Every structure is written in structure tokens, then in C-alpha cells.
Length: 307
Ligand SMILES: Nc1ncnc2c1ncn2[C@@H]1O[C@H](COP(=O)(O)OP(=O)(O)O)[C@@H](O)[C@H]1O
Ligand SMILES: [Mg+2]
Image 1 (cartoon, rainbow, N blue to C red):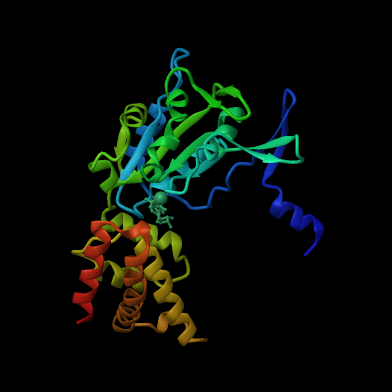
Image 2: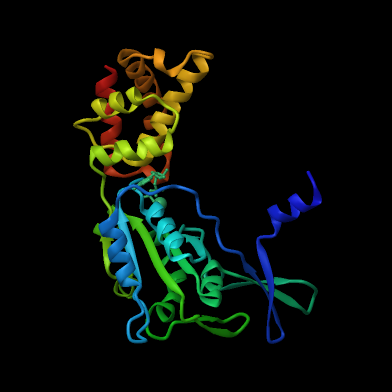
């Protein structure tokens, strides 16, 4: 591996001087190259929320819904169409307060440098901060967001003792699971400051088919037809649907090495999909992202199909 390539892979921070402070500010996240299918209404609502009208700062919004229905995909699309840098923070029990603001690191016994959070970076450079899995962050850690998300638009970091005023073009949004939204797991001050709360639900089967076609580009049309037929009356998230079809198609390609797509028939495709279901959907039980009611329904549907 060349030194340049290694440098490219590890240079995730930019060293910035703020007065006499040295702060390592993270670069923006890479946006996955996924072509979004539909979701026009949600995109319109999000864009309207972010309008800067008559000099009044944009509002913040949150997306909520079942796992795997396209919340992240919507945010990636928004960043792409607005041509803005995207900075992602992911909520979790282990998230520490400094990870929202700045973390000090000792460079010698008397000197410190600071690692800025993605939120800090977005505020400094006028990008979008996307707080994913917002409800999974401890409430105490969210406290600095109060002044970021109201008219003050400032982030206070006690250590190193700075108060950062957001760039005028800074935007914020968040996402959380449907169950967390419905059981009101957000503290009041975050709930009030991240409205509108926009619901993202399961797509229709026509849209799901289009999503599958975007993700499994080389598969024969028959695969999509058989897939949609199998899930005609069931609920499956685009994430699970994409994984399931990708896996089934890979199994087929691997085992039929050299056979062309066109040789496959409905019965054979259905068999590969059944085999894939067993591995893909049952694995979700242990995945925190799939603890939702819908995933469990999907698993029971599969058991029915398999017996
Ligand atoms: N409308 C859509 N258009 C294209 N791909 C989608 C769409 N909705 C979901 N997907 C695909 O489904 C998967 C899960 O989407 P993601 O945005 O991560 O869901 P969530 O954030 O709601 O858990 C991704 O592979 C994504 O590409
Ligand atoms: Mg997500």
C-alpha cells in the first residue's frame, strides 16, 4: 500500500487553530452512493423545515419510523441535493458528553489538543449534523444541544472553555426508532427543539420493487417478481428486503457458477429466497437495530413460509 493511500485513509481530521487552541476537526462523512426511490413528500417537508426565511434560522426536524425503512437514505439524499457536507453522530449508551462537544487529549504534561465532535465540525463549517439513533443517547449527554437547537445556535464546550456560534448555513436533523418516538423517550427540551417529527413508514410493494432493482442491478426481472409475490401480504423493511435478495442472488450465482440468469425459473428463485430468509431474517433477532415489532413479524412470517 502506498504512503499516499494510507494517508488518504487515515486523514480524517483537519488541524485547526482557534486562538491559541489546537483543535482536530473531523472531515465530513462520506455519503453512500444510493439513488433514492420516491419519498418526495418527506423530502419536501424536510426542505421546507430547513428554509432560511427572512433571516430567521432554519428549524430542526427528526425522522422516526421502523428500522430499515430509509431514514438515513433520506438524509443522504438531502445532503446531496443541497450539496452540503454531512456529519453524523450516532447515539448509544456509551456516548460521552465530550463526544458532543470537544474531547481533550494531552500532548505533553502541560499541553492539550482537542478533538472536535461531528456536531462542532458541522457548526463551524456550515454543514448538516445528523444525529442518528437520538433516543439511544443518555439524556445528560444531550444537554449541550439545548443551546444549539434554539435561537442561540451556540455550542458550549466547558473544556477547553469555548462557545461556538453556528455558521449561518448550519442545519440539524435526527432520527430515531418508532418505538422510542411513541414511548416518548426523548427529554422534553430535545422533543421541543427537533420538531416537526416526520414519520417514515414501510413503502408500497411497487416502491419496494424499485428499491430492489436499484440494489440488485444485474438480476433477471423474475427475481423481483417472485420476491414481491412472496411478500405480497407481508411487511418487510427495504433493508431486510435488499439484504435478502442480494444474499439469495449471491447463493444462486455461487452455486450455479457459469449458468446465465435466464435459465432460472420461478420455483428455483423461490427456493433460493426461502433459504436466504432463514439466514437473513433470523439473524435480526440479535441485532439491536432490528428489535422492532416489524422484524419479529417478519421472522414469524418466514417460519410460516418455511413450514
Ligand atoms: N427510498 C429508498 N430508495 C432507495 N433505497 C432505499 C430506500 N429506502 C431504503 N433503502 C435502502 O434500504 C436500506 C436501509 O435504509 P436506511 O436508510 O439505512 O434505513 P433506516 O435509516 O430507516 O434504518 C439501505 O440499503 C437503503 O439503500
Ligand atoms: Mg438508520
